[in-house]
Structures are given as C-alpha cells and as structure tokens.
Amino acid sequence: MQNSSKDLCLYRVQTAMETLETAKMCIEAKHYKDAVNRSYYAAFHAVRAVLAMEKIDFKRHKDVIAYFNKTYVATEIFEKPIGRMLAQLQLKREKSDYDDFYVVSKEEAETQYQNAIDIFDAVKKYLSDKYEIVVD
Image: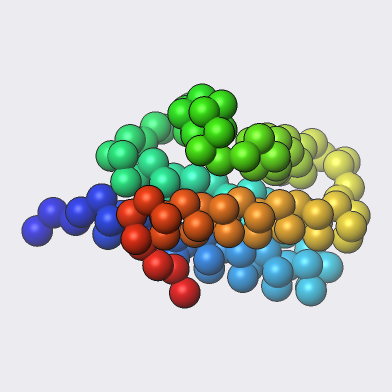
C-alpha cells in the first residue's frame, strides 16, 4: 500500500515534534552542541513536511532549504524571519557539528531551540490553514 502525501507530511511533523523534545532534553542536560543539532533537524523535518504535500523532496539539505526559501519565503507564504531562522539554524548546526573547537553557550542553544519552535509553529499554522491538517 502506498502512503499518501498527507501520511508522509504527518510522519515528518511527528518526527519534528520528537526531535524538538530531544533538543529540549539536550539543553536541560547541558549538551548544547547536541541541542543545536536537534533544533536544526526539528526545523528541517518540519520544512520537509511542507514539501511532502507538494510531493517534492531533495537528497541534499541545501536543496531542501533553497527550494523552501524560493517557493515559500520569497513569495511570502512564510514570513522572511522564518527563512533567516532556518539559515541561522543550518549555519549553527554545521559549526557545532564540524568545527572541532566550536563552543555553544546555553543562550545560543536556547536561541536556536526557540527558532526551531517558531519554524515548527509556522509550519503547523500553514498546514492547518492550507490543508486542514491539525497537529496536536
């Protein structure tokens, strides 16, 4: 049986929610680099949930984000700050994952976590308004 776009969307939303919870636990455990990583992935999964409804996907993260920005942010379906937050999350995640001596402060981890929440909330609103998909 083939899954529908809505099923894939809901799966990705659920993944984003679980990843947000993990980011919060990482902050509470003072694992700030991991919190930044999980915050980015929560936002990334949320964005891919939007793309699922279009039956669009890409293998590379940068392609997902570029398409989202071009199709949804530049056209003001999502507000410009969402695109900036997503870019900031990606940048911080890459630095924290790949720069050996990059130190993430508690404040930075909390900021990126809040960015991920804001993106997730915007995605939830969009999915509800456009597709009547309600996320609890």
